[in-house]
Image (cartoon, rainbow, N blue to C red; front, top):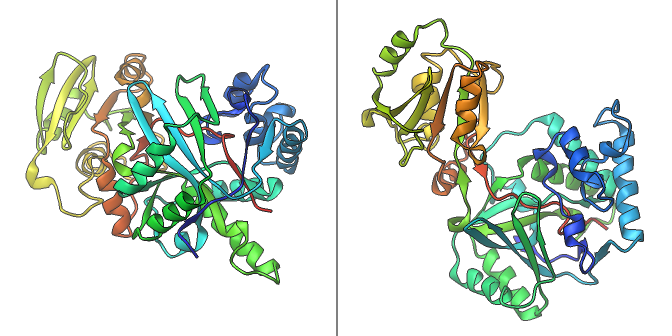
Length: 412
């Protein structure tokens, strides 16, 4: 089985992409989705967040919600808003956010490769979130949320994608977030075959975002293999919807920390203890760390730059991450937060919100202090995945986000 293969995408009809595309289902809560979809009957949120079309009291995981998603998908297909291509193809997808641009391939990726760790993970998943995606895939008989994958830079792949992107696009839409989403189709069978061959020669692909979607696809495939007596391995359920970019083009933003209290310490005692492991320099402006090992600290209306002692940076690919260095040398031993996954004294803010959001929440009294971090590097993520390890929670914030609705993978 090849690592990736083309597929017949279900995608917006000509001129409909701007009406359809929506943010990923997991970056909006129900009320945000309801507001964003207001007056937009063809928004993909009616499929990815179908509870918005049901009474506010509904449980988002109730059977009626998944049934509503299937109903809305059928309606959009019956009305010609979404149409499926008549043969398996590859698609080129460009994201532009401000001055950042990245060009990747839309394809389906092998569940078998995921199961054997050739498509590599770096996060734990939660069973309840997996269950939700399994039920969604089952109700729609489709995968509608693409998994974001990275591939090690491959010049010939990059060239073939760039050549396609010189042609007129099939879809071009500016999302409300300001991100531009553009899609092209690769129809040349020779190019399709060459891309399949090039990816099959790669040792691994890396999940950047979409661990629950890929885990759910694996579970759906296992279930269907058991119930399908004529299973051959060629069925669509053996592959999952993916968008893959060269690792050098992907942008990880900082994922910052807010802490509710000083664990009983005074400001002065807290800073004294921090100084045992970090150099502390007062800063006149908000601190956006420029290199790994640097951190910003906002406390009592003032910014400080923290620099960890080089002797405290281990060689282990997980322990040397900035998120680990801060957790292991400060947040856990000084602030007493040993389990950031569950402790309610800590919160996380994606760098897309800026350092002003950290100041606002501390100045309001909601939180007592904040830490700004240097973004995790793609090379570090890949090293963790290659080692078969997992990253600490909230280690990466990828921007720009993929759109839901631009291409979906039908399982039949």
